Image 1 (cartoon, rainbow, N blue to C red):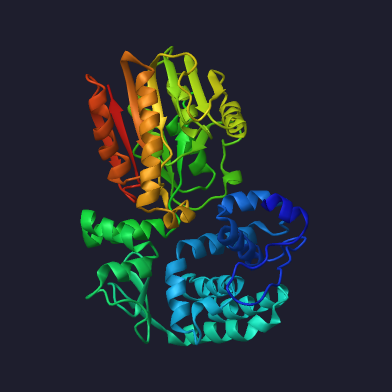
Image 2 (cartoon, one colour):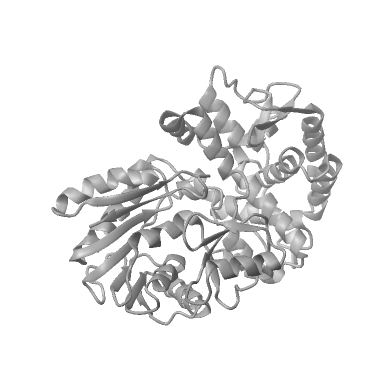
Amino acid sequence: MWSDIVKNNHIWKQNTTSSSSDELLLPQYFRSARELAFFLIEEYRCQDQFVSDSLQHWDRRIDLSPQDRRLAMEISIGVIRRQLTLDTLIESQLSRPREKVEAPLWTLLQIGVYQLVILDQIPDHAAVSETVELASKLDRVRWKKIVNGILRSIGRLQTDEIATTPQANAIPLSHNRFRCFTKNLLDDPETNLAGYLSQGYSFPLALISDWLAQYGLEQTQQIAQWMNQRSPLFLRVNELKTSRDVLLKELEEAGIQVSLGNEPQSIRLDEFVPLESLVGFDSGQFTIQDESAIAAGNLLDPQPDDTVLDLCAAPGTKTTHLAELMQNRGTLVATDVSEDRLFKIEQNASRLGLSMIIPSKVRLRETELPEAPFDAILVDVPCSNSGVLGKRPEARWRIDDTAISELNEIQRYLIQLALDHLKPEGKLVYSTCSFDRRENEELLQSVLPQYPGRKIIRENQHLPGNPGDGGYQALIQ
């Protein structure tokens, strides 16, 4: 495991078809943003590890300013998001087959091209020189020539022209803004629209094709662009400690740009603000939660003194919302399969001043649940994360028919388990952070006929960017 490898202060042998068997040394401390980004991406590549998990694991080795730490996250997450776009550009300039390029060298090229093409705030000369210098820091002087050559070659192809519509010589940067090159580097959207959107926005071709069939070109572009940019954060006000109007005023007085959200407890942050600078977080006045997730608790609307179950509860963001709606009165059982994840629920509840939550560890195929039957149940099932691919960039490369089929089996089991433990007059919300019909409407349509008298009363369907993340909720009574 990676913990053992890191403990020995070295990293993997390269997983590559080239003849090199060199080892890359993990530095004692990360002293530059690009160095940290390189190792975060490499751990993702070698171990399919989430960047956020790697960052937490290596926290004591990071000797960086907050600004450099944010740059490392921007580069690492950005490279994983846009890897298909970056690979398309790099391959266009290669004089050898890709499989002949060492995998860690490819990561270095991706980092350079991301800075050069996608990040407007980094000057071209810095993107090239800093990436070439990183090769030296990695003790791979022999990589410097190819890195310098490919980056400068791509740099020469860039122009100052900005297009407003898809074209084969243009890379999408933001809404209706495409960086132009002197030659065609992507598929022609006139003859292969899905191929162009897949390469340009960096999503699996099957996913783009599915979105085009369901939503058309304009909506597909909006979804893809939403996933490729930093999305706004929303605060869920803890109404047991303050009110939305009071917190909004306190934030405005602190010089933070905010506005009212669409959900009754939500406030939108209209600028990027480090969490530690937000007034009221430590005292439990709010939780960071997207509006599409806040909608799940509001749809269930549990009442004080109810007996409620949150079936897949950790880390507890939705659980604590339910407790707040119940005014910290009644019984709220929060189940999960991991003690560590249940501890996160306890931490969140403690910060928010909530004492009614009962964390309960269950086994994966548990058939009996404590405190059953329940007045209300939230079933927030594991899913493909298709609605939050911007926040979880690794997930976009894991979505395929096989993965959806495996998830459907788990989702079906969990909704059936919940329905079996619901009081006859009770209510249940089925929730995902996906907008894929196979995990939502179609799955419920396959399960509910087994439960005569249970039917969908209301549905929330959230498309990414309208106004927050994508997702789905159904209220069943």
